[in-house]
Length: 441
Image (tube, rainbow, N blue to C red; front, side, top):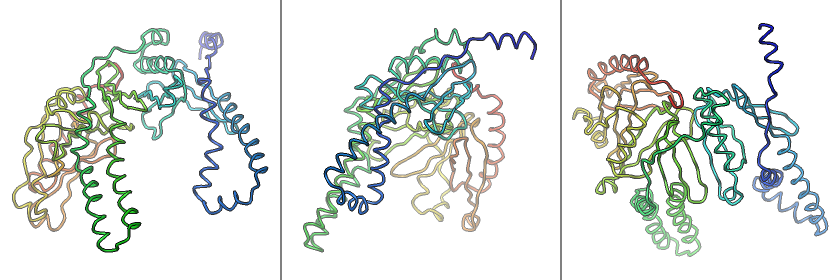
């Protein structure tokens, strides 16, 4: 380094570190209580014996010690947590006894999500979750003020896109244009027409009478019926709460997804990181022309793009994730001799290869059409067992960067061999011509 470079580094102002929102200690104070609760759940008999041995005075003394200790722990953990944005990274320092410093390089950031649990919304704070390429676990800042969280998110995305530090603070949050909003009534109806809901409900109505005829025990019937009824409603209610007011908007930093009735989440589909798009069509949705769109995103937990929408609307949103891609209308079925290997299921398999995607369909009652852009294919494999070899059939698998595999099943053996060679070439040329995986590119 030159003398001038040393002088610049010496005169450069120190990076200002910031603390989390003052409400954070109340959230972290629950950690000691959670440890005790976990021990009680792990060993309920031992916990009950220990509680029975304690007198009222001992319990009051324990509470008098535990509550201040929990409060002190929450305060100290907040006091020793700092974060700072430097020219090249986001730095997070945490730890009371054991110090940990996370250095998150800005160019490696692929998504920054803002989530607001119910109590956080009441307190006016939010949680910032940073999704980094190659990291299995997201780093997070919990909690920040809502305005501070959105401003920091906008700054991080602008810096990740290559803006200078001074300009990044002035860019602000990129404007967004709404593409889709799922009405609550349509979401509720779609959940009622889901096969899993009806299956649990039918089981809850059929199994208890059979148990009564077999055992004539009211307690046995109740012990089975109540969990079945709870399962029938819990999954649908949970999805309704999580997917309530689902909104998809387009912005320069990717597709933004806002959703949630109690806990609001503000997520971003990272540009260029989508590996697979699945168009799901349950049986009872077909007369209404509804579909669900799911995603596989490398290094991200984002898995749903559209919970329910008419097919034309869903395909228009999909076009923003996969520019220039047209969803194949009618994938070709395997040859009829495939029925020797899968007597009924073979009719649900299909394959379509276009200039931009490898599309494989499977499922009869619940159809799934998986679209893999050629540029996202990491490897191609052909498998053929003895029975399939007898009937001149084979499966072609394409592996994506999200660690998932999409398979074209029961294809003619000659077609599969030709497809294997052609797909390898398409993947190579697709990666060469692919758009850069950059924010706001």
